[in-house]
Length: 268
Image (cartoon, rainbow, N blue to C red; front, side, top):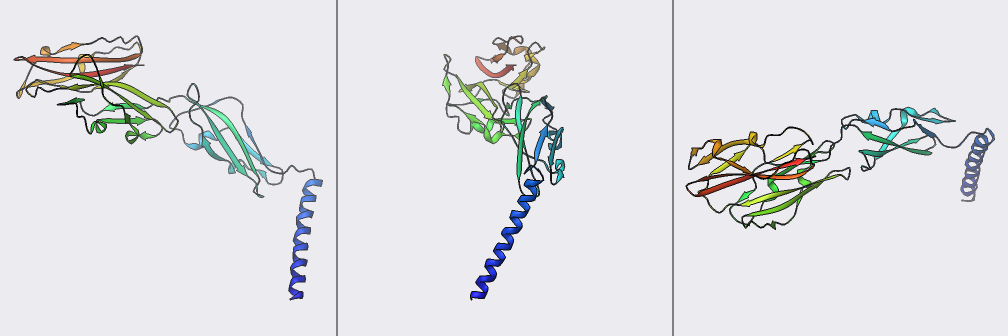
């Protein structure tokens, strides 16, 4: 038993001596412990579709014992969006002794666009019971793709028109950026009213661009018969030169039955 104990003590002493000697060599040779990462100055411009390798452009790593560690650099994460479509990317690298070095740099997405909400069917209901309305919305993001499951909606807010309510729809992507739009919800109690169909019920328009709302009118049907597009009257105001959200209402009256639907235009 004493022999085993003596051997263990001797083994520990040898390991300790090797460690101390190794540290002494590093210290006496003037070698800095651990690697370092060097990042080019300035903001790196990237596309949202660029592979991760593009984020490593202009980033190098070096260790005085291991030499170049550039091929070992990893992207440990990208921050949420800051201002002007910029974010911070963090890099890390380990040397052969598991010493860690980190660095950060600013990147700017040249083609980033905030999430977009879309409507897959008109927001028209026979009563104020709009159960299931969440399924009427989709959302897409240039970075995350389909984020429809992240859509959130508010309760109905009444307007001065008893058959018209408004709802706020919002979604946020993984970058912390959100989109929000206010949309009209029509309560149509007259089942005999003409049915107006549009090709889209929510459109995004760039400020100053040309836009023809009537071009989105697809059909007008009354009791199984197609009516002329001329029978539809559009109400509401739209200013494509001023950013904001505009609601345009398409109405058609036949035999004292009035049907309507809405097109929301987001000018940005």
